[in-house]
Length: 227
Image 1 (cartoon, rainbow, N blue to C red):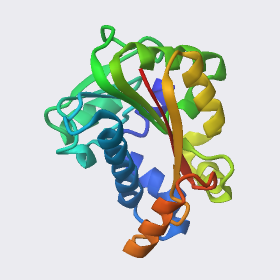
Image 2: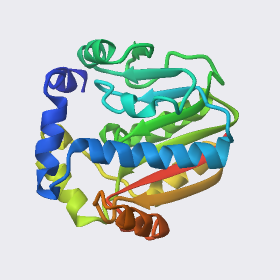
Image 3: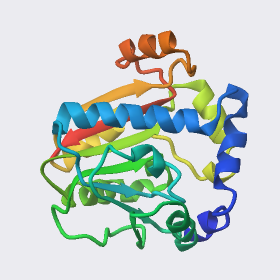
């Protein structure tokens, strides 16, 4: 897996953009949508204080500019050392670390928030339970674990995944499966929110989509639980 993503360190954004060109929207739109959802979750679940955050499977760090002003301390993990080298060039002030894809190199209860954004579908199913246990382990009591994933119920999501060069190994898992993994790891107050049902930058469309967050047809979803 590390060799696969090492090879995309310099053109990761272009490869992702080519897989979603049919939407007519830039990759940044989808990044902002994730950041907006995460901001809402932080406010609702963690309160006004800015949390410390661990982003697992962060790649080249393309999501991290969208987190400015949202978190107080950011760390990123990835199996690809080459991707992390690019992330360090692009993002100052982030603690980037390589790991073996299994065990997170942090002490218990090190963060207020742990995220895995479009990562779990690359993890072998036999490792899903351990991966979720590791996410829970590094988060403090009262903190939040959040997994953002592709929704296999959305046909356009399946098209985008099929068009993406480095998603050939992807095993998509639904929100219900992720919530079960969270429950098995001991998380509570578990929930899910679907988004990108109506991929448009129009403000009215964005408001309509916000009202449809419980409809399980959005292109992506966030599953979350409290430690």
